[in-house]
Image (tube, rainbow over all chains, first blue to last red; front, side):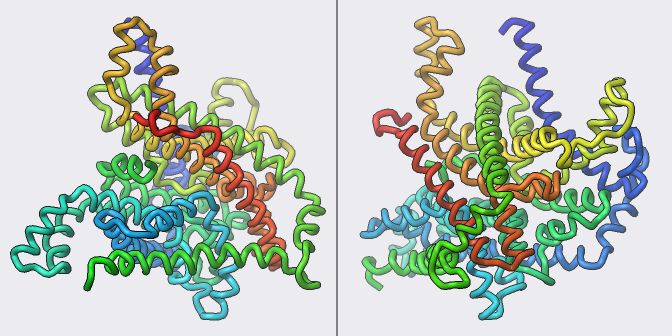
Length: 268
Length: 281
C-alpha cells in the first residue's frame, strides 16, 4: 500500500470510530449537564459543567427508578424463559434427526419475516383478561417470542460443537442422560449459554413497542421514556437515553468474544 | 424413555410457546383487523385508508427504508473490507464499531437529539464555523427534509452494526485462496471484490437485508424521540390508534399492513438473491 492510500485508510478507520463514539460522548455530556447544560449556547465539547448530581436528579424522579426495575425484571425473565425453552429445542436440533425437524426450523425462521412486536396488539385483550396486562411478566412473554428463535438456533450450534462421544462416554461410566448432560455438556456449553442469555436480556431491555402497548402504570424504562417524551425537559430525556445505553453496552462488552460466532451461526 | 420420543419432548415447550405467542396472535391480529363495529368487514381498512395521514405515512416509511437500508449495507461493506486488511487493533476497532448493537432505537433517537436539537452540538459547530448566527431548528414540521435526514443519521448510526456483524461473519467463510488466485492473475482490488467477495457473500447479504428491512419497517421510537409526531410513520400510527384512540381494530389493520409489507420484502429478497448450493463458499 502506498503511503497516501495508507493515510486515507487510517483516516477512514479513525473517522468511523469517531462517528460511533462522539454521539455517545455528547449524550453523556447532556445527561450529566443538567438543565443549564442542555440550553447552554454555544456548547463546548469539553466536559466543563458536568456533575453526578444532575444525573441523580433524573434517577430520583418519581417513576424512573420503578421503570428501570420493571425493565430489569422483564429482561431477567426474558433471559430465563428464552433459555429454558430454547436450549432444549437447540439440543434436540443438534443431537437428533427426527420427522418434523425441518418444519420446526421453518417455524423458527418464519418469526424473522414478521415484525413480532406488533403481535402485542391482540395480546393486550388476552392479557387484560388473565391479569398479565401491565406486568413485567406479561411484557417478558412477548419479549421471549422475540428472543426464543435466536436462543434455539444459537444453542443448537453450540451443542453441535460439543462431541457426542463425550456424552456417550459418560453414559458408559454409569451416568444417566440427565447426569451426563449436567456434568459433561453444561460446563462446556456454559460460556456460550451465558452469551445467548445476555443477548436475550439486551433484546428485552431495548424493546419499545410491545412494552409500551402492554403497560400503563408498571412501565418499563423504554415505555416510560416514550410516554414522557413530549412533556419532559430536554436534559431529562438525554439522561434517560444515557441510562438506556449503559447496561446493554456493558453486557455486550462482556460477551464480545461470542458475537461473531453467534451471528455467523444464527444467519446461516 | 425411548430415544424416539425424546426430541419431541425437548422441542415441545418451544413449539407450544411459539404457537401461543406467535402464531395465535398472528391470526388474532388478522381477525381483529377485519372486525369493525358493524361486524366482519373491511371497515378498519377503510378508516385506515381514508386517514389524512395515511399517504404521508406510507411515503415517509418507504422513503426511510429505501434510504437507510442501502446506506447501511454499503457502509457495512466498507467497514468489513477495512477490517479484513487490519492487523493490530482489529479487535478494538471491531468492538467500537459494534457498540451501537446494544443501543435501542429510542436511545439512538435521544442520542441524536443531543446533537441536532436547537442549541445542540451541530448548531454549535456551525456557529463556531461562522455558518449560522444563532440556534436553528432542524427537527420540526417546518423543516421536514432536515428532520428526515436526522432520522436517517440516527438509524444509520444505530443499525449499521448488525449488518456489519453478519457480513464480517460471512467474510470469515470466504476462502483466502480465491482472492490469492485472482491476484496471481492480476485482478485489481476492485475486481477481486466484485467478482469474488461479493458473490460469495450473497447468503450473508441476503440475511442481513431481510433482517434490516423487516426491522426498518418496524421503526418508530427513533422517529418519536427526534421529531415527536411531526414525521408520521406506519408503526407510530398503529401505536397512536391503539394507545391514544383506543381503537384496536384500526391499529390491527396497520399491523397487518406492516406484516404484509415485511413478508413481501422477505420474499423479494429470497427470490432476487437466491443462493444455489454450488455457489456457497
